[in-house]
Image (cartoon, rainbow, N blue to C red; front, side, top):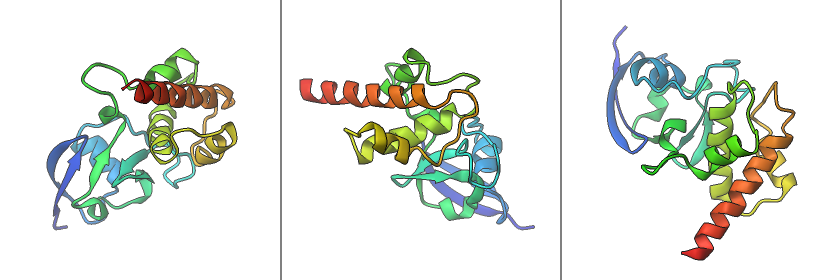
Length: 162
């Protein structure tokens, strides 16, 4: 099968990759680009472990063809941290025990990142609704919600100080 030449920006860097027309984006990210942060969970878009940010929207990369991402700007969990260390969301998840086994954590943080871009000051209800497409089998969600709300407050405080 003839491979397609795809160009995209991934975590701020231009990337050229050859992929089969039927290749899923999650497989190209993990296998061809070595970005193993997004996880393969259900492969049906129900769990959210594969969540990435694509052109400013949360996308479940397990049900998207890589060819559909040609020309796109993609951010994975690997691209969320800054040069000075962890993003406030990552620190908040650690500080507030928003993770246990960690399998869902990259997708959770990547979705929370976009959620806070869309709504910088969400209520608990808005966080729960906004995160509904990402499943966790371990935490019971309470600490995930706490972590996101804490990160939102930290980001608001930082922004107000600037």
